[in-house]
Image (tube, rainbow, N blue to C red):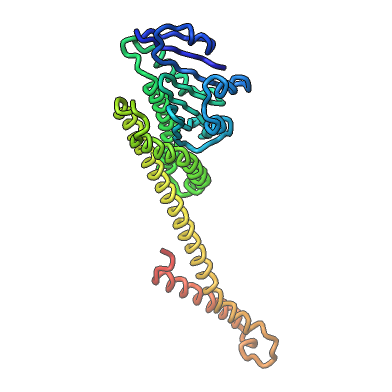
Length: 317
């Protein structure tokens, strides 16, 4: 699907259905063409109508490219990423900024582009800015969508951290590793987008950028904040993981301590039982009338004494 919006010199906004209709508009100031889920025939218009550079067209058709910026004569090409709020899957949005036009190309329908489109359409005529402002609006909507996805992850981490019992925490450890994977996926998008905005702000090739420098700086600030949030949340997952490892180690130490105490208590008892279990004939104690009961009492007193001594030493703390 292709949709077109054109802005005239007197700030009138017109929506068109075909590219050929652009030739019929007098005093055309700039226009925006959005390729949404384009067919093969529509994709060929990138070359047949706009005559974009073959490498830029190849980047549009080969999914998924890293966020980047390229300059081809008077056309500036940007590869941006949108993020699905639920799955955190990245999708590519390609943007061409020319002298008097903006072209966006994306294989999937995106609410972010739709919101940017509506902002341009509904903007009062006296405030209708140029194509670079429309490109800023698209980038701003894409970056703003990163926040809900990251904030949902923060809520999950906070719920795990304040979950209460250690047993519940051990149950949620798998969620911690899942969150780390989500943060890694977000980082693979946010950091390249941050680097891209840094390049845009410091580029000398985009002449009109000086009029919109503050706008793009605002997006860059958002990306800096997002990158810091990702790193902070990754540190939190590391702390939760280390806490679990420490908790598990302490639990294993307590189990080993208990087993060691039991083993040590039974060692002398086993030794005594082993001695009187031998089948030698000349064992005077075997002839004692109360010998059996005396040995049992001695073994009980020995076990109780060792237990009291271990408790005094703090082995059960």
